[in-house]
Amino acid sequence: MTADRKNDHVRLAAAQQRGPSGHNEFDDVSFVHHALAGIDRGDVSLVTRFAGIEWGAPLYINAMTGGSAESGEINRGLAIAARETGVPIATGSMSTYCADESVAETFRVMRRENPDGFIMANINATTSVENARRVIDLIDADVLQIHLNAIQEIVMPEGDRSFFSWRSQIERIAAGVDVPVIVKEVGFGLSRETLSILRSIGVAAADVGGCGGTNFARIENSRRTGPDYSFLGDWGQSTPACLLDAQGVDLPVLASGGVRHPLDVARGLSLGAAAVGVSGRFLGTLLDGGVDELIDQITAWLDQLAALMTVLGAPTVAALTHCDVIVLGDLRLFCLDRGVDTRSLSARSVMKTEEGCAECTR
Ligand code: FNR
Image 1 (cartoon, rainbow, N blue to C red):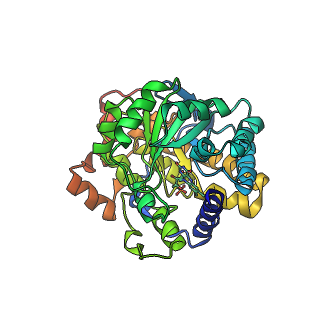
Image 2: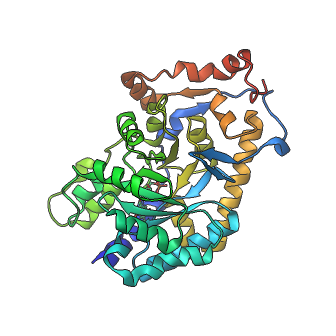
Image 3: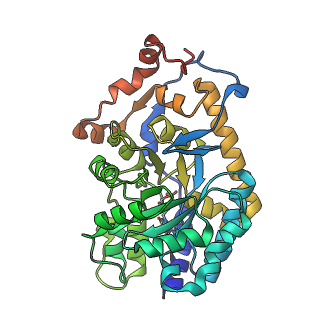
């Protein structure tokens, strides 16, 4: 049953990738072009730091799969791509391993193929502290991701219906494991209210996991035979909306959900994400083109991100948060209602320069 679900998720998520890539709210974020802002490519560093963690690049392969023979093979390919490109990677939910040890190898393969890489183990918010420690030990994880997926669960025929204990259980896990805990959504977004709660219960960072990409309300709806849930197809906040909403919350944020290309990565970083995660897009490449194509894609994205930072005059990931951006469309309306000041984003490089910001070149 679980193995079938894992295989369904891969098949249906990959099918979503093969559809038209279309508009999402990342398109509502534009950099103001300053023709004399450019710096030298050699002066750009992709290193990013957050919550005491340092990564060589602000891009990671986000949680997807494991728990079936097919998904173990996918994890092997993803882990090889992570090793060859040096990007961090997350497992899919290891809750399946907690229930059935026979699937251990479908996760352990990621550490075997990537012995020195940065690997995040992934569990759900009902996992016991003991099982959280077991999954960390199984793959010698550097970080524990806990996913929040209430919308997916209610649409999933076999999904959970009890969510009240999630907050206290996350707090217990965060206090009971000896690696940093990152809480992530699976594509419906984290509000600033949720981020504040996460901060107060000992979470090290949050991945806002917004909508605009892989859509688990639609995936689960297409798997069910009972009453239709297609009205939830557009539920949630987009990734850029979450990042804008998070301004001022004192918790490091990562961005994933709907990231289609290196410009989306730069947009996410400019809105305050310490790093940007990709699932569906990389899964599609792996399944259609194989591991070599995925390695080429990630390598190209990192190079293209550095190129964008060069023309934007941002020598560091942090410096991207001083680049001027314009927020348009529905995203602007969201900001208006949530009291997020978009105007200050559009001229912040000048403001920062006047204040003497060392990282700004203009
Ligand atoms: C996922 N995602 C996911 N997330 C998680 O925390 N645990 C999981 O087990 C899974 N499983 C999973 C399977 C497949 C096939 C996909 C494509 C995705 C969600 C993923 O980490 C991410 O939050 C969303 O996919 C949104 O990002 P993209 O796909 O739009 O880049």
